[in-house]
Image: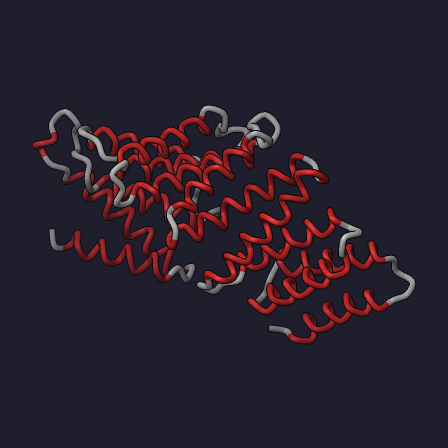
Length: 319
């Protein structure tokens, strides 16, 4: 970390607080603005802790006189805590509490969009905490669905797509080991498909690719009496995603999608109507995709993905 840059920015913000020429509102605004700068492009975890400190200072200055700024500072602090790259449940629990406190104020004072964004953030932190309490996943889905009442596809297509994507992933997480596995996985696929009725390739390519890729993943693992058909549908979804994701512009996303497509191909016969004939051609295609994905992951320092693909290639070599 470049301590001089970080220290000078924090020092400048604190000096503004001490300035007699600035109003309380101006001081709060400056604190929030500097904190947002740390969160937007953090170079290290310390930048995020600096943001947390500044947001705390802003909340302290707000008192009861500036409730809307207080809510915004708490939302900002919650986001900074979520972004800290540590596996620390306490940080996430604090972020959850901050979002819930802020929402009480935002519902009365802020625009529907600000409130919906806070619900979206609350959903994310609840989803992150769900491994220790599955009931939080249900609360996460509820928060996303409430946000969707504001973030409609007509006005906010990006948020609409992300929310449906998050809902689907939440349902997939709930399906693991559940007696209602089929129901949850079906709801996940449905959420992707609902979004894709509105999010198209031409107008929203990035969101379209995200939804298609994740739909393919859901279809692959959806319990069904027709697994070949599901895998075939998954391949089609990945091909749609690959109309956007490419090696030049989005190498990591491209590598993820071709690796996912390879996963589907190894479980897909060459001819759906003649599964007994085997899948030698699809295995060869899958091997090529895995090899390309491995090269991209390795080149871009994606160690865990590279190791996973390498292991699959080793297993394929033993077939």
